[in-house]
Figure 1 (cartoon, rainbow, N blue to C red):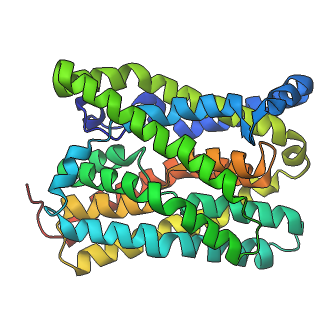
Figure 2 (figure 1 turned 120 degrees about the horizontal axis):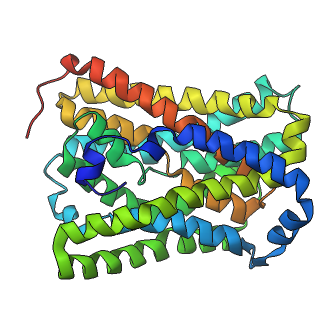
Length: 353
């Protein structure tokens, strides 16, 4: 999704358009299978090396690798072409969003919903939403940009910058916020997760892209991504099945927990979008940069958040559950924001080529 291909220019594909439905069905399948085949799920949970669950690691790679192939680091030389949009999104992603997400999590899980959520669960859900808030989007970015007819060059540069920033900033930001909220940070596992799920896929994607460009140019990259993209969606859905298979007893006993986790995530998403959108309008940024800059700032790299939550806290943890709820709410929220942006583009300067 991080490459401006002709396929994505047409908008959301069938799987992406109905991603929340597929996730909801995967949740149902996970709850059912987790109760029917409890022994199998216990065996899968035991397949760990250095706190990394091997089946989930393979699935996360299936999710992340196709996205990393789409990242064109050559675009970084155009970083000065649309500096205002980059500044807005970077400020939101690094200086605002992680901290507002942590604050909303504390307010709702530790106070507003305190009578509905046991303290240990509240701490786990808080950790999960912190991981979501600290992971800048690199996955669905071009889909949202295309749906608002956003500037393709700006969007590609923003994605590349996000990946570079994430390599260096994700672990420190997460560690800081988990520490502030008194959640123990297993530094070795956190750093291992960043290496496994960000740095190595990024290197593999770069090497793959370079080989494809050398052999067939941009068309070869687009064709390769089209072939491997189904594995990304399948990896996500199977991961959701596993997570909810392990969470089955908890969720069936307290189904309200999904809605409770969704509340701060929804407030965060809409709040961050309108903050970035207003900043872009006030700064005179044209719509074809303002819309993707606000949407990119709002969206999360939920694949990374899911992977790190599993590594840090386990497959059956509340943190992992919270990140999957993030997947469930992200697509309908982002589509509603795309619709709002398209209806209000007359607020902005005309698009610039």
